[in-house]
Image (cartoon, rainbow, N blue to C red; front, side, top):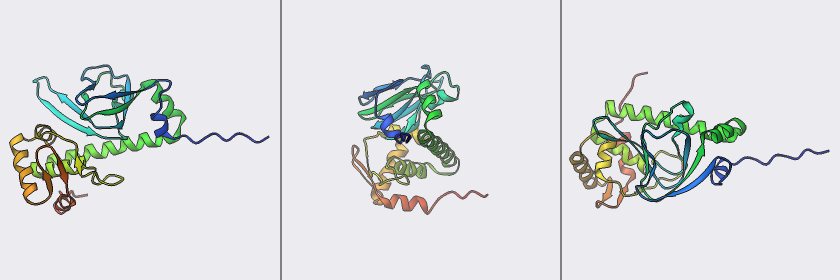
Length: 224
């Protein structure tokens, strides 16, 4: 008697459906997904849109620690024993986000190798990004940090085609992300525009490949 072959598991189809421990929500621009200090009881996955993660210090200073796009997870710290959220997550534009309760995502990680591979790839990618951000802060000028951030926001260097048109993002947010002042960001944005690296009119931002070439020709060198 022939055994029935188990259908292949598609992680993205799984994340796109409501099910046991899984829900999908639509978030308006600036709507909070979770707040700093909330209980860490679920992992989230961006199906569509962009999410900003921010941290506020005891002195009230706010910093943007990440901007995430489609096909990225966030809130995964709960899987490593993080009882409370250390950041606030908010939609930057209208977004569709899946929520997986902690027990549900632990179960699918254990049971479905395809999902495990996808999730591990995300974790490794995030780790590499954090290390690169640290090198950027330690060795690069604020001008180079801004150039790199614009390229990351436009998806240069990621799989698939870049998205040179970036959703509206304020100069204050860019300043928070790279650790400088708004006036410095404004100065560099005008400089990039004059050099033909970007087209920018305050609301629409288009990043050109020439900015990538400029950054690649002046990378910090690390001895190994």
